[in-house]
Amino acid sequence: MSTGLAYLTVVLVWATTPLAINWSAEAGAPIGSVWLRMLLATLVGMLLLRALGGRMRWHRDALRSYGAAVPGVFGAMSLSYAASLHVPSGLISVMFGLAPLISGLMMQMLPGSVRLRFWHWVGCALGVLGLLVIFSDALVPGSTALRGVLMLLGAVICFCGSGIAVQRVAAGLPPLNQTLGALTLSLPLYGVLWLVSGEPLVVPLTPRGMAAVIYLALFGSLLGFLCYFLVLSRLSAATVALVTLITPVLALTLGMLLNNEQPAPALFVGAGLILVALGAYLFADRGLRARKGPEPAAGVSKPSYRSDQSVD
Image 1 (spheres, rainbow, N blue to C red):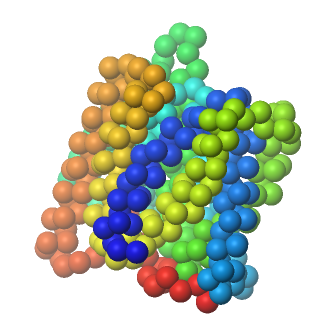
Image 2 (cartoon, rainbow, N blue to C red; image 1 turned 180 degrees about the vertical axis):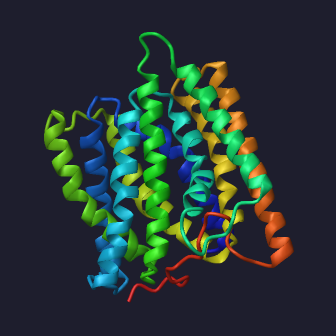
């Protein structure tokens, strides 16, 4: 697949995933819906791996890498699905737009990472300000939106921490193996969470909800991740991070057009501040690379997986 097509696929999948999550959870069984999504993605992915003549890796480093990815696949997704019942779908994309900033802050505590410069800190400060604006909008008497925002913040932290951990393990796994390993280890956790959640064991999906689950399984959990790993192996981390500037705008627009969502003005103000924060953060990365030559963006390690598409 060409880099341009893969990049466009990532943008479209990430922009449409929040709305699909909202639709798949609209019947009131978010955990059952995400378990079904992950099960379908795992089964289809295993069939694809077999068709390509590949095999799963279960050696020690592979298991460590799969385990490091579990907080991102299980923690981030389960929190996102639960939050989708309380907040507009576009807010999911806006909150995940904070990922580069949060990753950068996390990496400051680890040895060998790129140190944040002035504009990085400006971006982080603007991101926090945007988050506070969104929090203030959620603090409405009788509203459950604050619970949803807190869940999303937890989801982003899980996603960022998991990504850093996978890169630190550096198992050198092909993208499809990494994705399937993380899905396989996450399925039992989703099953246990589903049992203790009190949700019905038969997911009451509407036709639209079932279509959303299938879309998320095939595109959100498989194609989207594979294309993301592909572009990350071919382009600079800062260029890939531009996706987080594009998808919140598209996701908010889709939510208003297709789901009759009417976000409050404060949400737009907070989203705007977060986008400006990302712009400042990426501007700092560009200046850093210009002075020191090509290197990972602050808070982003070099990819540890193989850049080819072999699955042997």
